[in-house]
Amino acid sequence: MSYTYLNDDGSPETVKTWSDILAREIPWETYATARLITDKDLQLIRRYDKRSSELKNSMLDESGPAYVEAFMTVLKNVTKPETVQYVLAVLIQMLQENPTRARLFHQQSDQHLASQPDPYTVLERLLQRQDDWWSQDKACKLLTIVIESRPRKSTAADGDPAETHISLFLDWLVSQLNSRANLAKNPPAVINTCISCLAALLKERATRQLLLRAGGLQVLPAVIQRARETPSGSQLLYETCLCVWQMTYLRPAAEVMGQVGIIKQLVEVCRVAQKEKVFRMALAALRNLLGYQDLGLASDMVEAGLNKVVITRQMQSWGDEDVVEMLTYVDEKLKEGIVFLSNFEKYKKEVLSNTLDWSPMHTSDLFWRENAEKFEERDFQVLRVLLKIIETNRDVKTLAVGCHDLGQFIVYHPQGRYIVNDLRGKELVMRLLAHSDLEVQKQALLCVQKLMLSKDKLDFLKS
Figure 1 (cartoon, one colour):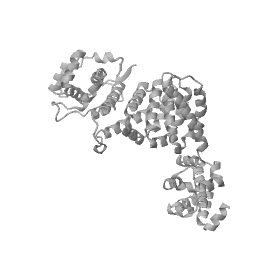
Figure 2: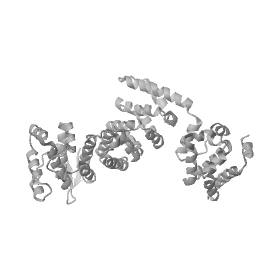
Figure 3: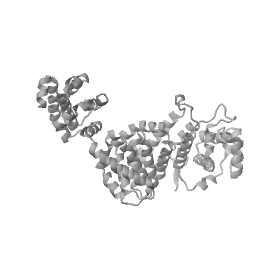
């Protein structure tokens, strides 16, 4: 794998191998003369640079934080690509030889008491080096390690000083996946690194909350699809499914997954995955989602063909007993979901998607007679969303169906007229009387008429 970056004069330069970078001679004295590093930094770097592993280990054991700070100072003040790449290579090599040294990034030496370079800020800046993929890639990996190794507070009340940096990093990861997931011209290694780092960070529950806030789930379906369509994409596919699986432990995330197409992609992975670990991870994510039975995700899985996939996969021989157990569990839950998923749950999902259509549920008197009082759940959540659709949606079919449904609620709920008026429903529907679409006008008028009818006349409409 090679990476191309631009020199200061704009000419392209290719980084071929790790050893090419570590073989470079860096003009440390020049940086000291330019006051980009201190004399103490220069002494430490010259003492460490190009030494044997045994000697480096001894130096790090003796004054590890000082050496890390010296190299971080270089990254903070020097912009020349060759030097930045070299220092990143030195630091990552240090961690590869002994991962516990990550703690050195969070320890303070005596030499930078007043101006210790902040590793988060330094590495975040390197993420913006868009013309130097190699440095961006290694800064991404190094920042992940720094975040993972940070000291934890004793109680949740103490907060996490790194939360702002984690949020910024997640925003950056999401932006990379969002802009590159469908562009074959960009280096695949960048996407692979972003997903690998994301999978590592999502071990923490608090980070899952931050990713959800950053809109991270919305970009994952495209990444899964790209990985499925890439012959060598099995590791990317595994790690992306790992990210999804970790997010399934968060109920709000499970709700989003039912709306952004992740379930369909997971089912497709289960259908085509050749490697057992990939299939197992996708199936494990679907298994967790089936635990939220009230979300009605089983119907999405059946619609995507998971029940047929499970039947086919159960005929295979599996070396992992956990896979056999998961297949049995998923098979049973899908059958239960098909039996117990009520029409109201299907209706609720449709309303929460903000897109309505003239399906039989909307026009069935039996549906409204049996389900009108279920609108009371969670402080009239479905009704409030329906009113929001009527207020803000621009799709004419959705508006027409929404006005019709509101009228049906008024007719079939004992207190429907009063509840809708309390929630400003009459005001919202009246605005649509002047809508440019005739069907929207018609349904809005019918709804307003039902709002004006007395209870005995509403009861007559039910009969």
